[in-house]
Length: 502
Ligand code: 0RQ
Image (cartoon, rainbow, N blue to C red):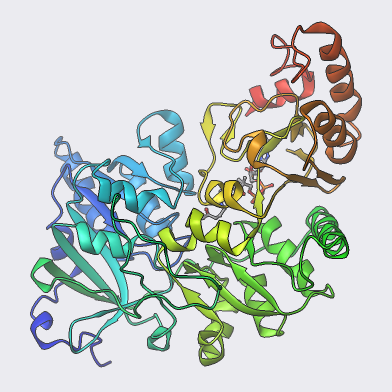
């Protein structure tokens, strides 16, 4: 196949993945591409893991810090975590090997709002970025980079890194060209200007990444598919959650608080979020738009059937089946999808201005509306906050959803007090489980508690939660947010026992 490195001068930098991996020294901060299993480098991290394992086998230390857009795949997080190559990881992961290392204490992890990452690097808060390893779909004759299936923090990594390694992946469609919108107008305070976007469809940037050719130290040609994780078909609980959300949205339209075609939708990661989008396809809503970070299968299907007219995201993260459809009909989708840097897809200014309706998954919520999206048992990380906080705090309406129980009904996902807080009661307006939907807007803490217990708790935990709340009403001095602090984390024996069993 013909090389996708069209720039003459850059061709001389083509080398093998092993040669490129050898250019990454121990102790480096390495910014890699990748967002929710798409657009991550697929060869260099694997070769780097091999090299690090050999070095470890000789008894010598070698670790790097890995910064990305969001989660990646077995070839990146998996390969490096397995050989204990990561000193520090940020800002999001969902890999089983990474998770294990973090929870056993052999890898450090900083869980950061996804919109903050790029600016933290520009501010110098995270130290110097030494190396960037970025997957692209091609290099143009004049040396510009055609982004691949995710953008994430790539613009910042390319601008900031001392050394740049590019993976040019011919699996990625060259017809992606034109789908991206890279905004180069972000400045540091005090020189920041308003971001000139007032509608989801606005293009405010350029189709390509600019890059300083002198800092490119290696180009590796690859041909390998994205992670393409399959979604499970919506189960009963997800369908019920979707149903409650759709009824709520219809009610908001009737009440005059939302236009008939709603406002731009944001949908989080995972099966439940995907099911809600699938539910919208069967609903009466039309002319919808999305301002989100990840475009999953059900959203693609909403575009295909014409219900979703425009979607902005930072990554397309599709199953194999949906990927085939995406690639086959890419000219159609290119007119309807814009991929942006994550600092723009998740920007508080834009989320607030556009009036985004945010829908994110959670691990648990408490009766007062605080949400835990990241921790199991208060101490172990699951994935990370991702973009949920960027959207929740700035949304027009912010919803969190979960089945009412986990682990085959042993654990209640509605608890007296969350054992880790990601989204405070101030950022959470609607809580949804398969049992029902609690609209917490305009309610005091005590009225929120009554509604969350009534609408969202599973019947097998409802009496215990109600009893906790009733006793708290008489057992504390502060009746603004009544709690029994010595019982708040362990009042349900089943819940406590199941956590211990984990
Ligand atoms: O674990 O598979 O081992 O049983 O948590 O739970 O029900 O499969 O839910 O896939 O929707 O994920 C919050 C993790 C939900 C996700 C979270 C266990 C449960 C299972 C997953 P098992 P489900 P989902 C934009 C938005 C943060 C990032 C975000 C997430 C596993 O939505 O990572 O929102 N969100 N980003 O058994 C013990 C409980 C539990 C529990 C669930 N109460 N106690 N275990 N589980 N509840 C996208 C990006 O930022 C990229």
